[in-house]
Length: 108
Image 1 (tube, rainbow, N blue to C red):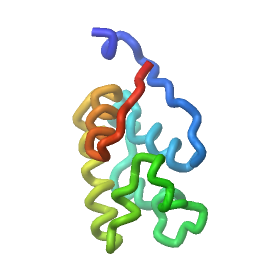
Image 2: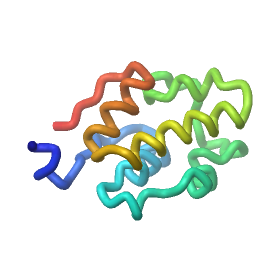
Image 3: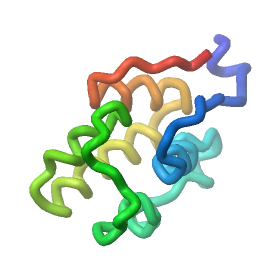
């Protein structure tokens, strides 16, 4: 019940601000405000030629991206994340996305 009444999902600061921005966009409460897969692929964090992205940081919860061999594999992961974000409340989506990467989630 709290997930329904609590409209704000608070994100703790993380080292990679671009990653935080992507997650915040994907977890918009209003589904029409969430980006499409195409829009996400244009985000600076997900651009293949973005040199600011540190894929070696496994603490970021996205180590699966570091092991991806192709852009298509990355796109598949992004598609799964977007699907969870579109089909669930922000809290449920956050839990499911974190579980995809075997990472704990703190929604307090």
